[in-house]
Length: 340
Ligand code: SD4
Image (cartoon, rainbow, N blue to C red; front, side):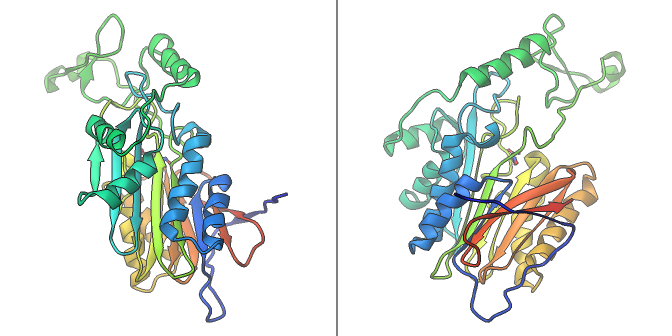
C-alpha cells in the first residue's frame, strides 16, 4: 500500500550529495500522485523519459485530475471542454496541441505531432482532424458535471465572472454576444466582474522526468480555464511556457494563470537559470519573481529538475503548493509542499 509523506518547507534546496546522478527521477505538479506512479513504473523498467511523461500525464487525462485535466472540466463560454497539451524531449523535439476538440488523449496527440510531423504545434478543429487521421477516437468531452457547471454559470450567474474587458453584454441576458464599448462611454456601463483565478480553475499537470540514460522530457496537459472565451489557449501547450526540456541541463514545467504566465516563458527561464548554475529552487524562484514583478496578484508555480536529479519548485499567489517526486531514494512517491 502506498503511503505518502507531507513535508512543509518554506525554502529548500535538494542536492545529490554523492557523485552518482539521482536518475531516473520524475516530478509532477500538484498532488497528482497516480500520474507520478505511472511515470515511475515506466522509468524504473528502463523506459524513456518521453514515454514516462506521456503515460504519466495520460493517467490524469483519464482520471480527470482535479477536474482541470482531461475531459469534462473547465467548460468554455459555449459549454465545451477543449484541451491543451505539450510534450518535449531534451533534444528539442516538440509536439503540442491547443484548443483540441472531442479527443480525450491530448498529450498522446501531442506526441503524434512530435513523432509523425515536421510541425511542432497544431490547434483547434484541425488538430482534431489530425488526431482522427492518426487513429484517435472522436467523442464529446462534455459530461453531466461540466454541463451542470456551465448551466449554473450561464443561467444562474448570468455568465459571470468572465474574461471580457471593455465590452457590454446583451442587456437581457448579461451574456454574449458582447459589443465593444467606446472608450468615452465606459463610465456608463456597469463595472466588469473579472474572472477570479484560483487553484480551482487552474491545475495543469506538468511533469518533468529524467530516465536511466540521462535523457530529459517534460510535458503538460490541461483543460485550461473555466468559462474561457472559445479559442483561448493558455501557457500549457507553449514550449518554454508550459514546459521545457534540454538534455544539457534538465527541465521545468509550470501551472497557474496561463494568460499571464505565457508572457514570461517561465519554464524556459528556469532551465536557463539552471544552465547558469542556479539550483532548481533558485531557478524557479527567479522565474516566478519575474512574473510577480509585473503581476503581483498572479497565481502560479514552476517545478524544475536537473539532468542529475536535483529538483525544486517555487510558487506565488496561493498559500502553499504541492508537487510530487519519485526517485530511487524512496520506496514510494513523496508529496512535497512548499510555502508560497
Ligand atoms: C492554463 N495554466 O490554461 C493552465 C491552467 C493551469 O494549473 O495551470 N492550471 O492557464
